[in-house]
Image (cartoon, rainbow, N blue to C red; front, top):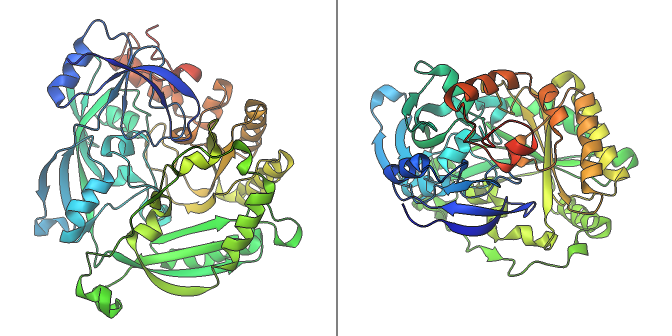
Length: 460
């Protein structure tokens, strides 16, 4: 086993930062050696570090970075798969790598979050969802099976039919059951690398919800940018984007020549952290007004990067929040409480003077079955919140308002939730903890998040 490095690690929001012992294995055997090493008292797997909080850092043991285990092992595209293909790959393969190598063959991840720089293992552990959850559900729906390395060193193949409890405890389980080594997942066949996007502007929150309800069933992808700062009759105004994959015959001439090879723009970068006070109500209000103005109701054809991954076009974009960083809060409210919950969340943000450049609203479909999975029917809103002195007090107030409306907080984006609020938000928490106790009786697998929330993994 390579010597362990010591690094300061954080999630994608640069908060909190943890001094961590880090291992970077290059093959499954190396991971097994790390797990078997008696000097490694606690461990958690980490992919690209795009979870926003402290889910993928170990503050009392070893963080196992899996990005070097990134081989694609097999691709089954037989006709019996109804136009899909099954990819077998190591857990460190990213969605970006899948797209780079397999989109030219007409294959695309069936579910993707807002960045392509996530690993397959991370996508399973967080049960990520995308702009098509109302139609296709979460990432778990397309996972055939995976191989899990338990703290004991035993390997288990987990699927809906084989070790199902372990499968559903691991899907969305924040990495607390062991280390995913490889997986098989179904990929979608797409007609091109482009999407036809219908932009629709709404004047207020009621109109936004009505637009979703009347249009999203006919589009595979549906998402809205929401203005968090407007008040009065324009409160909750939004730009709704409905989209579907564009058939090659409907592409503009230049794109139709090479339908799977779009001309992508080179990413720009934020070279250094910007002044911490750059994100304030004035700048966010100006940005929101501009965004709303330049997105009139219209229909356009765009490449997959611009629709799925607009933030990937700016490297290190999180530096706009300065050195102190930010947290992201994503809440889901049940359908019957959706409007009330969203209004309360927006009001709480305004009262707390917490501006958000990015506010993303989506309508959610059915739950996946993961014991700790976030996606469930209803409405979900994600916002960025700069780190300030009153952060924890404010976030606790916001979380309690979310819970008041029967809502839950996405753990993949959390850095501040109090442990007392976890069980009310996740009624199947006890099931997961029982499975975890069975496969990890000494509590070796855990993270700063699991320690914070009292979910074990501290060696106790």
